[in-house]
Image 1: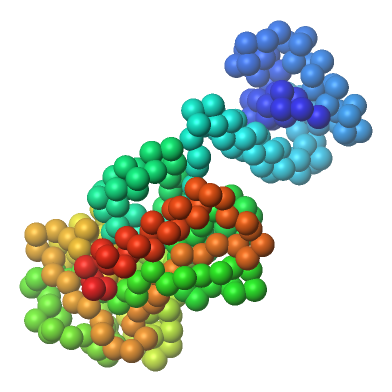
Image 2: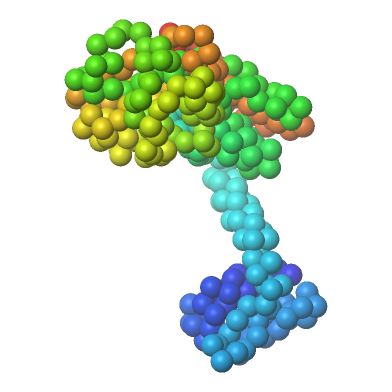
Length: 301
Protein backbone atom coordinates (compact mmCIF):
# COMPACT_ATOMS: atom_id res chain seq x y z
CA UNK A 1 0.00 0.00 0.00
CA UNK A 2 1.44 3.37 -0.98
CA UNK A 3 0.52 7.01 -1.00
CA UNK A 4 -0.64 7.01 -4.62
CA UNK A 5 -3.06 4.14 -3.98
CA UNK A 6 -4.53 5.93 -0.99
CA UNK A 7 -4.93 9.22 -2.83
CA UNK A 8 -6.60 7.47 -5.77
CA UNK A 9 -8.90 5.58 -3.40
CA UNK A 10 -10.01 8.83 -1.77
CA UNK A 11 -10.63 10.47 -5.15
CA UNK A 12 -12.95 7.62 -6.18
CA UNK A 13 -14.61 7.58 -2.76
CA UNK A 14 -15.39 11.31 -2.96
CA UNK A 15 -16.62 11.36 -6.57
CA UNK A 16 -18.36 7.95 -6.66
CA UNK A 17 -17.37 7.89 -10.32
CA UNK A 18 -14.22 6.38 -11.85
CA UNK A 19 -14.14 8.70 -14.86
CA UNK A 20 -14.69 11.85 -12.75
CA UNK A 21 -11.98 10.75 -10.33
CA UNK A 22 -9.61 9.93 -13.20
CA UNK A 23 -10.19 13.37 -14.73
CA UNK A 24 -9.42 15.08 -11.40
CA UNK A 25 -6.20 13.07 -11.12
CA UNK A 26 -5.23 13.60 -14.76
CA UNK A 27 -4.90 9.87 -15.45
CA UNK A 28 -6.82 7.44 -17.64
CA UNK A 29 -9.94 5.58 -16.60
CA UNK A 30 -8.09 2.29 -17.13
CA UNK A 31 -5.06 3.41 -15.11
CA UNK A 32 -7.19 4.39 -12.13
CA UNK A 33 -9.17 1.15 -12.31
CA UNK A 34 -5.93 -0.84 -12.21
CA UNK A 35 -4.74 1.01 -9.11
CA UNK A 36 -8.05 0.41 -7.30
CA UNK A 37 -8.01 -3.29 -8.24
CA UNK A 38 -4.44 -3.64 -6.99
CA UNK A 39 -5.43 -2.04 -3.68
CA UNK A 40 -8.44 -4.34 -3.34
CA UNK A 41 -6.21 -7.34 -4.00
CA UNK A 42 -3.71 -6.18 -1.41
CA UNK A 43 -6.42 -5.61 1.20
CA UNK A 44 -8.40 -8.73 0.28
CA UNK A 45 -11.65 -6.76 0.25
CA UNK A 46 -13.83 -5.08 -2.36
CA UNK A 47 -13.85 -1.29 -2.04
CA UNK A 48 -16.53 -0.32 -4.55
CA UNK A 49 -19.51 -2.00 -6.19
CA UNK A 50 -21.62 -0.94 -9.13
CA UNK A 51 -25.35 -0.42 -8.67
CA UNK A 52 -28.21 1.26 -10.50
CA UNK A 53 -27.17 4.47 -8.78
CA UNK A 54 -23.60 4.20 -9.97
CA UNK A 55 -20.48 3.38 -8.00
CA UNK A 56 -21.02 2.79 -4.27
CA UNK A 57 -18.46 2.22 -1.54
CA UNK A 58 -18.55 -0.96 0.49
CA UNK A 59 -18.82 -0.96 4.28
CA UNK A 60 -15.14 -1.89 4.37
CA UNK A 61 -14.24 1.17 2.28
CA UNK A 62 -16.26 3.45 4.54
CA UNK A 63 -14.49 2.04 7.60
CA UNK A 64 -11.15 2.53 5.84
CA UNK A 65 -11.67 6.23 5.08
CA UNK A 66 -10.73 7.81 8.46
CA UNK A 67 -7.53 5.73 8.59
CA UNK A 68 -6.60 6.71 5.04
CA UNK A 69 -7.16 10.38 5.87
CA UNK A 70 -4.86 10.03 8.87
CA UNK A 71 -2.15 8.39 6.76
CA UNK A 72 -2.41 11.02 4.03
CA UNK A 73 -2.23 13.76 6.64
CA UNK A 74 0.92 12.12 8.01
CA UNK A 75 2.42 12.04 4.51
CA UNK A 76 1.71 15.77 4.21
CA UNK A 77 3.37 16.48 7.52
CA UNK A 78 6.44 14.49 6.54
CA UNK A 79 6.62 16.35 3.24
CA UNK A 80 6.42 19.66 5.10
CA UNK A 81 9.23 18.68 7.44
CA UNK A 82 11.35 17.56 4.49
CA UNK A 83 10.75 20.87 2.69
CA UNK A 84 11.80 22.88 5.73
CA UNK A 85 14.78 20.64 6.29
CA UNK A 86 15.95 21.54 2.81
CA UNK A 87 15.92 25.17 3.94
CA UNK A 88 17.82 24.21 7.10
CA UNK A 89 14.80 25.26 9.18
CA UNK A 90 13.57 23.60 12.37
CA UNK A 91 9.88 23.63 13.30
CA UNK A 92 8.35 23.94 16.75
CA UNK A 93 4.67 23.00 16.74
CA UNK A 94 2.44 24.52 19.41
CA UNK A 95 -1.26 23.93 19.94
CA UNK A 96 -2.48 26.86 22.01
CA UNK A 97 -5.71 28.10 23.50
CA UNK A 98 -7.35 30.77 21.38
CA UNK A 99 -5.70 34.19 21.59
CA UNK A 100 -2.71 33.22 23.76
CA UNK A 101 -0.28 34.13 20.97
CA UNK A 102 -2.17 37.38 20.44
CA UNK A 103 -1.78 38.17 24.13
CA UNK A 104 1.97 37.61 23.87
CA UNK A 105 1.97 40.04 20.97
CA UNK A 106 3.80 40.63 17.72
CA UNK A 107 6.89 41.74 19.64
CA UNK A 108 7.22 38.22 21.04
CA UNK A 109 7.12 36.66 17.57
CA UNK A 110 9.57 39.16 16.11
CA UNK A 111 11.98 38.88 19.04
CA UNK A 112 11.95 35.08 18.87
CA UNK A 113 12.56 35.13 15.13
CA UNK A 114 15.39 37.61 15.53
CA UNK A 115 17.11 35.39 18.07
CA UNK A 116 16.34 32.10 16.31
CA UNK A 117 15.93 32.82 12.59
CA UNK A 118 16.31 29.13 11.75
CA UNK A 119 13.21 28.11 13.73
CA UNK A 120 9.68 28.32 12.37
CA UNK A 121 6.89 28.52 14.95
CA UNK A 122 3.82 26.60 13.83
CA UNK A 123 1.00 27.70 16.16
CA UNK A 124 -2.57 26.40 16.00
CA UNK A 125 -5.29 28.20 17.97
CA UNK A 126 -7.69 25.63 19.41
CA UNK A 127 -9.55 24.47 22.51
CA UNK A 128 -7.96 23.24 25.73
CA UNK A 129 -9.00 19.65 25.09
CA UNK A 130 -7.89 19.65 21.44
CA UNK A 131 -4.48 21.05 22.44
CA UNK A 132 -4.04 18.24 24.99
CA UNK A 133 -5.14 15.63 22.45
CA UNK A 134 -2.69 16.94 19.83
CA UNK A 135 0.12 16.84 22.39
CA UNK A 136 -0.76 13.31 23.50
CA UNK A 137 -0.91 12.13 19.87
CA UNK A 138 2.52 13.57 19.12
CA UNK A 139 1.21 16.16 16.66
CA UNK A 140 2.56 18.99 18.81
CA UNK A 141 5.78 19.70 20.65
CA UNK A 142 3.96 21.82 23.23
CA UNK A 143 0.45 22.74 24.30
CA UNK A 144 -0.48 26.02 25.91
CA UNK A 145 -3.65 25.30 27.80
CA UNK A 146 -5.55 25.85 31.02
CA UNK A 147 -4.22 23.99 34.01
CA UNK A 148 -4.19 21.62 35.67
CA UNK A 149 -3.17 18.94 33.16
CA UNK A 150 -2.95 15.16 33.46
CA UNK A 151 0.38 14.78 35.27
CA UNK A 152 0.59 11.09 34.39
CA UNK A 153 1.07 12.08 30.73
CA UNK A 154 2.28 15.68 30.75
CA UNK A 155 4.71 17.98 32.51
CA UNK A 156 3.38 21.51 32.87
CA UNK A 157 4.90 24.81 33.89
CA UNK A 158 2.72 27.81 34.73
CA UNK A 159 3.06 30.76 32.39
CA UNK A 160 0.63 33.11 34.13
CA UNK A 161 -2.66 33.22 35.99
CA UNK A 162 -5.69 34.77 34.35
CA UNK A 163 -8.88 35.88 36.07
CA UNK A 164 -12.18 35.48 34.31
CA UNK A 165 -13.39 38.70 32.82
CA UNK A 166 -16.74 40.05 31.61
CA UNK A 167 -17.28 42.29 28.63
CA UNK A 168 -20.35 44.42 29.28
CA UNK A 169 -22.05 47.27 27.44
CA UNK A 170 -21.27 50.52 29.24
CA UNK A 171 -24.99 51.23 29.82
CA UNK A 172 -25.66 47.88 31.46
CA UNK A 173 -26.41 48.19 35.21
CA UNK A 174 -23.61 45.76 36.09
CA UNK A 175 -21.10 48.03 34.33
CA UNK A 176 -21.49 50.45 37.23
CA UNK A 177 -20.07 47.92 39.69
CA UNK A 178 -16.33 47.69 40.15
CA UNK A 179 -16.45 44.14 41.48
CA UNK A 180 -18.85 41.47 40.27
CA UNK A 181 -20.02 38.61 42.46
CA UNK A 182 -21.62 35.34 41.28
CA UNK A 183 -25.05 36.41 42.44
CA UNK A 184 -24.88 39.49 40.19
CA UNK A 185 -25.39 37.22 37.18
CA UNK A 186 -28.79 35.98 38.31
CA UNK A 187 -31.15 36.22 35.32
CA UNK A 188 -28.50 37.65 32.96
CA UNK A 189 -27.82 36.60 29.37
CA UNK A 190 -24.30 35.18 29.20
CA UNK A 191 -22.26 34.00 26.25
CA UNK A 192 -18.93 32.23 26.29
CA UNK A 193 -16.66 30.05 24.23
CA UNK A 194 -18.47 26.82 25.06
CA UNK A 195 -18.02 23.55 26.87
CA UNK A 196 -14.94 22.54 24.89
CA UNK A 197 -13.11 25.23 26.88
CA UNK A 198 -12.16 24.71 30.50
CA UNK A 199 -13.00 28.31 31.40
CA UNK A 200 -16.62 27.85 30.32
CA UNK A 201 -17.06 24.54 32.12
CA UNK A 202 -15.58 25.94 35.30
CA UNK A 203 -17.05 29.42 35.50
CA UNK A 204 -20.48 28.65 34.07
CA UNK A 205 -21.16 25.06 35.03
CA UNK A 206 -19.41 24.99 38.39
CA UNK A 207 -19.32 28.52 39.74
CA UNK A 208 -22.74 29.66 38.51
CA UNK A 209 -25.07 26.82 37.58
CA UNK A 210 -23.60 24.64 40.29
CA UNK A 211 -24.53 27.32 42.83
CA UNK A 212 -28.15 27.44 41.59
CA UNK A 213 -27.61 30.84 39.98
CA UNK A 214 -29.99 30.95 37.04
CA UNK A 215 -28.56 32.44 33.88
CA UNK A 216 -29.73 32.51 30.28
CA UNK A 217 -27.16 31.12 27.83
CA UNK A 218 -28.44 31.81 24.29
CA UNK A 219 -25.15 31.00 22.57
CA UNK A 220 -21.82 29.26 23.03
CA UNK A 221 -19.26 30.35 20.44
CA UNK A 222 -15.57 31.05 19.88
CA UNK A 223 -16.45 33.63 17.19
CA UNK A 224 -15.10 36.80 18.79
CA UNK A 225 -16.53 39.14 16.14
CA UNK A 226 -20.06 37.88 16.80
CA UNK A 227 -19.49 38.00 20.55
CA UNK A 228 -18.23 41.57 20.31
CA UNK A 229 -21.28 42.61 18.28
CA UNK A 230 -23.70 41.07 20.79
CA UNK A 231 -21.97 42.89 23.66
CA UNK A 232 -21.82 46.18 21.74
CA UNK A 233 -25.57 45.98 21.11
CA UNK A 234 -26.23 45.30 24.78
CA UNK A 235 -27.73 41.90 24.04
CA UNK A 236 -25.50 39.78 26.28
CA UNK A 237 -22.56 39.70 28.68
CA UNK A 238 -19.47 37.86 27.43
CA UNK A 239 -17.42 35.84 29.89
CA UNK A 240 -13.83 35.01 28.93
CA UNK A 241 -10.24 35.12 30.15
CA UNK A 242 -8.84 38.47 31.15
CA UNK A 243 -5.70 38.06 29.03
CA UNK A 244 -7.74 38.12 25.81
CA UNK A 245 -10.65 40.37 26.72
CA UNK A 246 -8.95 43.69 25.96
CA UNK A 247 -8.31 42.68 22.37
CA UNK A 248 -12.00 42.18 21.60
CA UNK A 249 -13.72 45.26 22.96
CA UNK A 250 -15.83 47.73 21.01
CA UNK A 251 -16.08 51.42 21.87
CA UNK A 252 -19.16 50.83 24.05
CA UNK A 253 -17.71 47.90 25.97
CA UNK A 254 -16.25 47.96 29.47
CA UNK A 255 -14.41 45.19 31.31
CA UNK A 256 -15.14 43.89 34.75
CA UNK A 257 -12.80 41.30 36.23
CA UNK A 258 -14.09 38.65 38.61
CA UNK A 259 -11.76 38.64 41.57
CA UNK A 260 -13.45 36.11 43.81
CA UNK A 261 -11.36 33.01 44.66
CA UNK A 262 -11.78 30.37 42.01
CA UNK A 263 -12.74 32.77 39.23
CA UNK A 264 -9.67 32.15 37.12
CA UNK A 265 -7.15 29.55 35.99
CA UNK A 266 -3.47 29.06 35.44
CA UNK A 267 -2.33 29.05 31.82
CA UNK A 268 0.42 26.47 31.44
CA UNK A 269 2.99 25.23 28.95
CA UNK A 270 2.67 21.45 28.71
CA UNK A 271 4.88 18.81 27.12
CA UNK A 272 4.73 15.03 27.05
CA UNK A 273 6.54 13.15 29.80
CA UNK A 274 7.79 10.51 27.35
CA UNK A 275 9.03 12.99 24.76
CA UNK A 276 12.66 14.08 24.50
CA UNK A 277 12.52 17.73 23.40
CA UNK A 278 14.46 18.82 20.35
CA UNK A 279 17.09 21.53 20.49
CA UNK A 280 14.61 23.93 18.83
CA UNK A 281 11.96 22.93 21.36
CA UNK A 282 14.29 23.63 24.27
CA UNK A 283 15.16 27.01 22.79
CA UNK A 284 11.50 27.92 22.33
CA UNK A 285 10.61 26.89 25.88
CA UNK A 286 13.48 28.84 27.41
CA UNK A 287 12.68 31.93 25.35
CA UNK A 288 8.96 31.77 26.15
CA UNK A 289 9.47 31.43 29.90
CA UNK A 290 11.92 34.32 29.96
CA UNK A 291 9.59 36.45 27.86
CA UNK A 292 6.61 35.71 30.11
CA UNK A 293 8.64 36.65 33.18
CA UNK A 294 9.47 40.03 31.66
CA UNK A 295 6.27 40.70 29.69
CA UNK A 296 3.31 39.11 31.42
CA UNK A 297 -0.05 39.85 29.77
CA UNK A 298 -1.41 43.08 31.24
CA UNK A 299 -4.30 41.49 33.10
CA UNK A 300 -2.00 39.21 35.09
CA UNK A 301 0.79 41.65 35.92
